Amino acid sequence: MRLKAWPVGLLLVLTLIGGRRSAAGDYSLIASPSEVTPPATITVTWNAPPDGVAANDWIALYEMGADNNYSYLTFVYTGGGAAGQVDFAAPNVVGVFEFRYLLRGGYQHAAVSNPVSVRCSTDVTPTGPKVYLLTGGYFPSDCAAIQALSDGGFDVTPGVAAPAWDGTQVYLDDFSVVVILHNANWPSALQQSGIDALVDFAATGGGVVTGEWTLWGAFSRSQTTLVSFAPVDEYCGFNYAGSTTYTLVTPDPIVADGLPASFGFPLGNLAGTESCFGARTEATVFYSSSNGGGRADADGLLGWGFGRGRVASFSTLITATELGDENYRRLFANAVAWAARSNCVAEPPTLANLSAFIACLSGPGVVMPPACAVRDLDCNGRIDLHDVRLFQHEFGRP
Image (cartoon, rainbow, N blue to C red; front, side):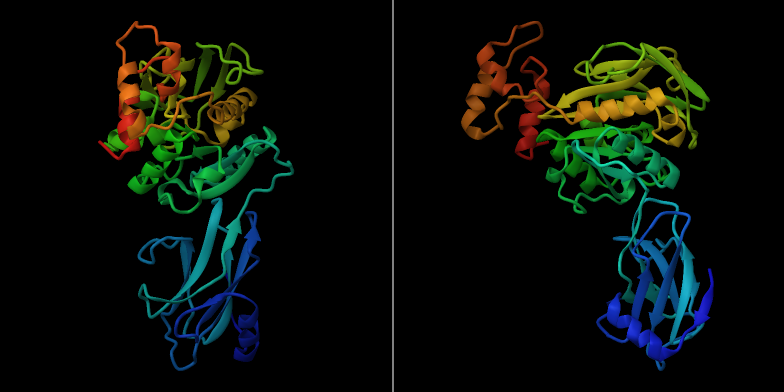
């Protein structure tokens, strides 16, 4: 990055065309351009009161919404200049960022810049369902996922990094599917408030698609809410294999569309390559994996209905390595298309229809009467304990 002193008068003019001031009103930051594609340079200009600057004042780059303390991505000291310009390399992460002017080597900021969006370049006009993508912390893989979905016709909105998602950044009802790329940022856990928002989204008809480290985090960190809505009830480890082969287990016209019965592909390695899963009895195993977590004939791609929505989970990471294979790339887009659909006709659970719901409860092997279809909350063809849990969830019960 380059640091240059600028005349104070010129910076005063620049503050009129961008940036956000602090309450003090004497500090400002302007970042330009406001949208970039790496590799690119972002130029930040600052203005500060001459009688208030210090040599250890500093300007730092943050993801929007990040806390001031220790969450910056990179920084530079101003050297005590009341005005100047500094060039930053665009972060190699898809997302929305901002620069903050911090005082005297501490974490109190005096000004925040305009937002800067780091985007992938795609030349596809979206026509299909809207997808919100929680990014994985590595630009090439995020862009590979965005491009694969865009090529499939989806309208993709790159969102915040998966660990930064707290459920408030967007209104999920505007989307059909959320894709979680918990890749390079896997050491940071998903937030409970974000998990709760995803569970509510799926329960009310949204689709969710996850990759490997999302469910590793759910089980290893005892995030029981996340475990409860995944199609997996067992996590049996992970491995470091360089490749695996997916083989069709349960044909589905959406998931298997355009794919061979079996195909191999390389695996990306981020402290491991693939997980070993155990599917819930209510879940569908669409593809098995020859090397899932070191176990032959492991579950590869699974899905199930959760409430009125659908959740699909891959045993692999979803990185540029896997997405570089044409068949895996298509399977990824197909899984998102599957998650975007729901044929559920269940009525929303209410206290008024509680007695009718209880009357439809049946044990294993009992054929569900046609009149009970509207009580089948997960649309799996029976009224069982999973439906009871969904009914409890609707009313905030554990």
